[in-house]
Length: 79
Image (cartoon, rainbow, N blue to C red; front, top):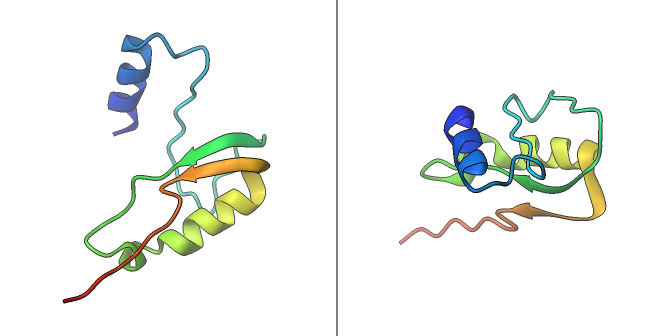
């Protein structure tokens, strides 16, 4: 949960540099551009969660041109 991540950030003395924001990435407006976007909404198959839509929409609005995402890519392999 976001609260657990906030605690980890605080425990590591990074609260002055990292802000944890939780919400629907497709509609969330944080009012600024950011250096990095971290997404944890990956299920058994990334596409089943709509990660491309949500991350694409959020990053188009809020990721700086030189910014990056975690994960940077997503691959689905079937055997």
